[in-house]
Length: 167
Image (cartoon, rainbow, N blue to C red; front, top):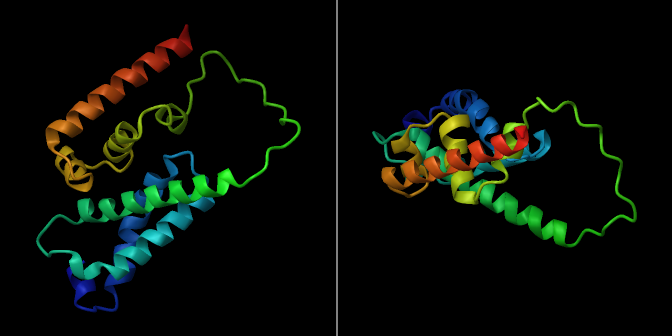
């Protein structure tokens, strides 16, 4: 990032190659389709380019990047919500595919979608983006204690959901 700020022509490609896969996983964790996740990733890189001068060399890069990605994701949710409000309902619902089996676990995104937004965000950053507690705290403008509490509550809720699904 330091080289990117100094206009090194090879720096942007190296940064994109290193950070795009985890960022794409971060966006895909929210029931977003691949196309939506790629759009959010593209928007994130545009914003990073626009605000690259705000990065302070010597500070950890990932929390700064994930704070930007988090805002892009929130803006994407708002945009999709506005679009969905203007869509019209269909007369008939499509047929559902048969359930696989009682022992099949729901997908991560389906489970996490049932959590409150703040807990979903913390779990996603911890488990999908593999950030540390300190990095998640910086990315969410929160304290480490608050992150731990949100994660604990999210894990408890997920355990209950999984137990209900098995009964």
